[in-house]
Image 1 (cartoon, rainbow, N blue to C red):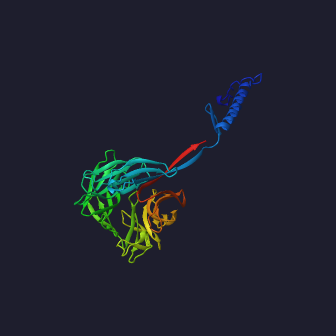
Image 2: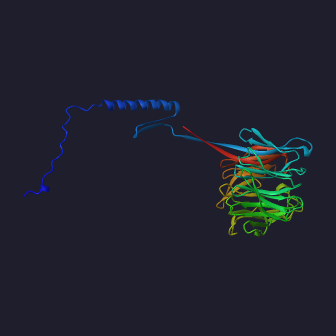
Image 3: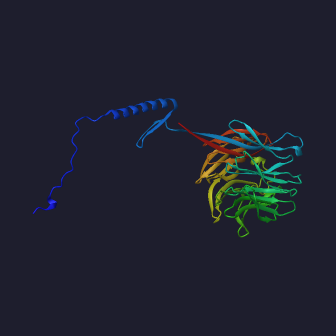
Length: 429
């Protein structure tokens, strides 16, 4: 008996072989088209440097040079200059934006006569603020101006008609969303308040304190904490040994840090997590080589080498050493935008990444003030080393090149509000 599974299954019938050769004309025509496109593409590359075609879903040709990228740096200096009126009360400051590359100046605004700029502050390369004080004005004794476009324009965000009022300090919050301001009305306590940098710029009272000077060092808006020092504004300076902190939520003031020697300067990083500062020994003798001539006898805040630099964690108050300078003189401390601490000496700006110093800028004259420091550049104001103050120079450094280049020279009638580094990236074929 036959098993059906043993039976061979019939095969499908196979087509008979073709009796003639296949027509290749469509393939040849297609190849001719491709060759022509390649020739056209080569010509296009020669004339415009790039060519790209695509045929169907699976065929594409791209002919051309790779994209090239250029980075152009545009430096702008924001400055205020008095006019040449002889009588002081007739003088007026005008605010300018000056291109370092071309020297072209654009006038931004002019302040009222008999008004001077008493404070200025920057946050990053976009935000600027300054205080205009009018001591004889009965309607607007102080005003705060704010820019969020690298100083190209300024808006008046706060005024007070309190006679003879003074703003003893102002600072941007760590997140740049508000300004913390210390206002001293005549005969009153110092009022510390916040200007929210929204469109309508609302204000909020933070605290009052019976001190002629409140010098705000940092404001953590999210953390609801303010670091500050006290003293006497325009009458003796601030306390060089004690740094205070105010907790807004608990309405509590306490000592954050007390220095063994006088503190040099104080900086708070943009995350409001660390304080960077340094201490030096108290100077007891007249020193003609000290910055700006020294004094005789020296005041209590005069300090000398060695200088020790350190950070303090705001949450834990843990102190960590950063570096030590055994000789010379120091000026300012700060943080770069990426959170790396930096210091200035008489003729250098030095950043200290992982306790390793790197010079960002070196000058021949003495550094009077820091305008701006980024991760790769610095801009400073210098004066002659003989302390004659006959010339104010703005010097900056090229990208990762510490050799100073002259950006601008001015006289005593010029104030410097900020220096912005802007980069334009252009890609082309």
